[in-house]
Amino acid sequence: MDKFTTSLFEEGSRVFTLANSGNGKGKTTASLGLALRTVGAGKAVFFAQFVKGKAYAEVKTIQQYIPDITIRQYGRDCFIHKTPEEADIRLAVQGLQEAATALSSGHYGLVVLDEACIALHYHLFSIEDLLAILDKKHPATEVVITGRYAPPALLEKADLVTEMKNIKHYWDKGVQARPGIEY
Image (cartoon, rainbow, N blue to C red; front, side, top):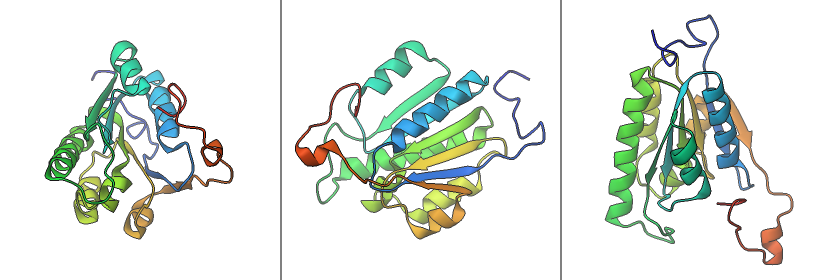
């Protein structure tokens, strides 16, 4: 057995489904921290970014320095403002399919579905499809789902739910997103 198939689950501990949602900053950042911790514990990570297609700092860093994190993006390099385009749906469905494979493989100690709640919000795939892949995940794989607008069915399914709540943000004073901090 290689270092990635040995799991906390096999040692008697449980693995969980986590949801990081809410309107505050830190959902992706918290998931990246957990991914680093997972790699540090000798386990591989699959990090799926939905509705993101730009080479953000975390993508560049992971690709260059952290081979035990597989990071994939399933979005275009622009925002969905109102109605998603066919390309948005196609990319999100592809991402969900690849995430399903990662979740059920037993190779990954952690699978992150970053901004999956945003993909749900824009109807890029259904909550039923997301819950179905969670039901088929390997018993030794932890999963984190992030994004605003987490639907009640996902909150019910999750073992741990964290709401990032915006209390005060410099964005409200006109400060734009900054490289290395917000992206």
